[in-house]
Amino acid sequence: MGTWIINGNVPEKGQDRLTAKHLYIENGKIAAIRDASEGEPDTAGHETIDAKGKLVSAGFIDMHVHLREPGFEYKETIATGTRSAARGGYTVIACMPNTRPVIDKVETVNYVLDKAETEGVIRVLPYGCITKNQLGRELTDFAGLKEAGVVGFTDDGVGVQSAQMMKDAMALAASMNMPVIAHCEDNTLVEGGAVTEGEFARKNGMKGIPNESEAIHVGRDILLAEATGVHYHVCHVSAEQSVRLIRHGKQHGVKVTSEVCPHHLLLSDEDIPGMDANWKMNPPLRTPADVEAVIAGLEDGTIDIIVTDHAPHSEEEKARGMQLAPFGIVGFETAFPLLYTKFVRTGRWTLEFLLERMTSKPAELFGLPWGVLEEGREADLTLIDLETEKAVDPAEFLSKGRNTPFTGWKLYGWPTLTMVAGKTVWSE
Ligand code: DOR
Ligand code: ZN
Ligand code: ZN
Image 1 (cartoon, protein in one colour):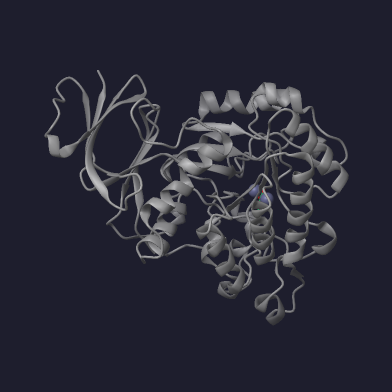
Image 2 (cartoon, protein in one colour):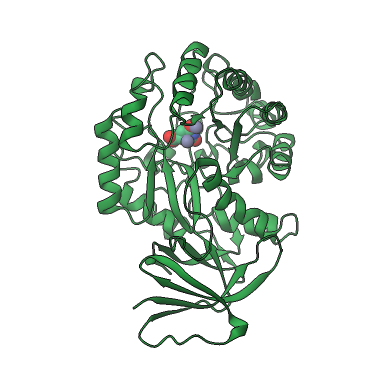
């Protein structure tokens, strides 16, 4: 017995159109994809899912998320985080190591992988720390962590302050063919800032976080990546200067790739309504000119992929106000609807452009076997309703986090069913 997903709309490679197709799934894999014009399949004895009117996409891949386990289970767990991701259409997520303890030892990697296996509903790929305790002083056991199954090294949450430490990390990672993923932030330029240096900070008399705090690390690291030959991946690009430096690095043949989050593509500091910490994240919302620059960077290929930086926090923590609340917003359950509604429905991007940056490109960048809908692949996919408009309601989130600036936004493109290896892991 297998599963037929019938009459779904499947994107055609290289063409901006959808074709009605039937997919047959057996033993967790896509066994056949048929044109619906060839007629109805014989579904007798099989499970049937009617996908009429729905988009069928490869499951989304999010290479930058915070699941909070171990240590911060009151913010999120692997159980709730993976369910939230599944509701957003994600089938693969790579989780950041700034947990408690941080993921800097083999046993913590094993803990996360075990939890994901037993309590998670989608694929979870852990990152390992670059430095022990993320303190920037001593490298972790890269070989051991790789062996345990990490997909890259990062100290996300903080920047690696020492150039020598970063260079050593890159040289070691390069020697074992592993990527270094960087949260770019020079602490000496940040101290105490909660929002970007811009209109909002000026109007409210607040210290701003300058673009250079990000871009200085981007520039430094591109030079170090050139020297060491590592695959260097820049996290959550937010500043115009960073885009410029990455573009330059790529032009010079450096193996640099990068990512951007929906909020940095859609919001600027001038949209912040007041002292509401649901608008506080790191890097912060930048100026309208920076927003245009990251959009242009994504459009010209300087920025490769879209990630959420899903960063749940409790309501109590976020109620501490703009200055004291922790940085971060949730992202899984709004990412696709936001980008589909604001960039695809408006005609700026094709649907294929958006889907590639959430599926096949992240897979390609990190050498993953998922992200493509074709015969023989694992049946990781999501069905999406592109026609029903619905407002963002954090009360519906499966994440423990309710911290979003997008409450009430009326959007299209809501996932209705998500499947991992042929098994439905979430449906409406
Ligand atoms: O907004 C953020 N939240 N940025 C980070 O770098 C860390 C993350 C978190 O862990 O909450
Ligand atoms: Zn970060
Ligand atoms: Zn992060």
